[in-house]
Image (cartoon, rainbow, N blue to C red; front, side):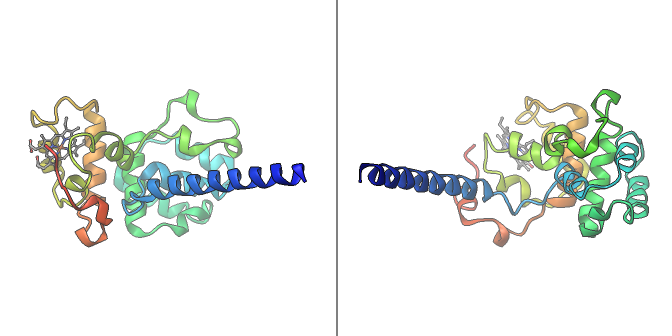
Amino acid sequence: MLIARISMRAASLLAAGLFAASLGAQAADVFGFIPSGGRTLLAKTFAGGPPADEVKALLAAKHTREEWLSYLRSRSKAMTGLQKLSEKELLTLADYLSYNMPLPPAKIPANPARVNWEKLLPPDGRDFTLDYCQSCHIVTVVITQKRSKDAWLGSMNKPSHIQIKLTREQRDALASYLVLNAAIPIDQVPEELRAGGATY
Ligand code: HEC
């Protein structure tokens, strides 16, 4: 009897915990509409378990964005995860690789099958947006704008933004991600990120 009551209590605590966890997951999902950046796209590609040599060759190569795009197209049989990416995702990934590859030799894993790629890979433009672009105004100010790369860099170099702790190269990579993935129509932005707008 007592045992039964204790385990009921444990069960309801567990249920409450699961409920809270699912609320947490929902809260994180508010940003789900912002397109994946290269870190996530590459992690997904590698999750398909491509041959270790393919992975290592990719991580050690240096190319321009255009070269990466044709490289990725040419490797889609060996790295089948690539076949699941849309044209825009492929371009976003090529763009990311042009900024982040090659990885320093010490970061290239000996056994790619046992790596947490989300952690190992450098942050992408989406990461920068979420980490550095919402402390003064709502992220909507950023991800709904359609701009050229120069216009993005211009905003980021204004007095209001110059203090943000992103290096020149990171700003460049962020601007490049935003050219490809911002300009999100307002009706695709969740309600709670629409009202209020900027607080500056
Ligand atoms: C330290 C506070 C602060 C942070 C952090 C910040 N902003 Fe802003 N942002 C402002 C202020 C203040 C304005 C309005 C005045 C202005 O435009 O300079 C603004 C306005 C903007 C605008 C609209 C006007 C314009 O300049 O085009 C854009 C776009 C923008 N921010 C992009 C970004 C991006 C991208 C990031 C992340 C890299 C970011 N902001 C992070 C303070 C900030």
